[in-house]
Length: 347
Ligand SMILES: NC(=O)c1ccc[n+]([C@@H]2O[C@H](COP(=O)([O-])OP(=O)(O)OC[C@H]3O[C@@H](n4cnc5c(N)ncnc54)[C@H](O)[C@@H]3O)[C@@H](O)[C@H]2O)c1
Image (cartoon, rainbow, N blue to C red; front, side, top):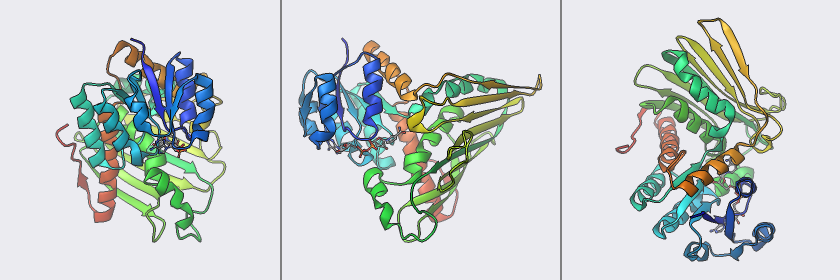
């Protein structure tokens, strides 16, 4: 049966989901937002029903898939309700507020037998997919560097007590690690698998809970260490496109190196992500250049295909849980100023 979508949350991120699903030819039949004005343009565009209360959407027997696009603080409540009602779920990242909530969602998804996708769309850049395909050609991996620097408006390092940035905690439950860094944690897990332990330093605006920079070492069983850093920064023209977006991943092996450079998340249709592969046997570097695509569109088409064929896919509930485990361990490691063994809770 063709999936029938209900979308909960019509804020910033929703336009990418709506457009991706529209391109995939999906049926969006019910929309919920506590603010009708936010939902109105989509209700009209898709001829969908509207409810201010998301529970009405979940109770609609015609809806087979629920997309959860509210801020993460509501993900647990809404995902659990959708799964209990027998719906498949697409949930925006981060999957939950913390690792405990994420575990609860993961176990509920597994127990339900429903399909569950956690939206980390950067996996769907062709450059990232090609990077994964090239990894076996790098030989034994011994080192990786991962960076997620984003230019945000406002003062984060000087003359601030943090109160002007409270919106980010209210909306997302954290600042740079949750908003920017989580994607590159997912990409590191996607390409390199799960580390055994990590050591982190998280830098907060003094006297606040606003994390403005986080540095970590992810330590793997075979000796591979990935150094990771995410930061809000004030610089205008850094990064590979010199537009203030400075996000990259480099992996070094005994036979070669790959470097991936991503582009500004909400303007991907203008600029493509870049992949460079250095092959030590031939001594040649290859730049993989692609047409600019929006990874949300690729991701939505993929989720829609999985849901139509009723086949599991990734990133899923386990991937979302893994990212939240890493974030929790980074916070703990920084607090304790000690290395932390990662507890994958039986996974
Ligand atoms: N993939 C990415 O690069 C990316 C970028 C930005 C945001 N996000 C994620 O997307 C999610 C949403 O972020 P956003 O920036 O769109 O937030 P937002 O605040 O702009 O939008 C959230 C919407 O949900 C609505 N809402 C809140 N509670 C609700 C409820 N109980 N029922 C129905 N509607 C409700 C709000 O009214 C609002 O319109 C977050 O998890 C965030 O981390 C991902």
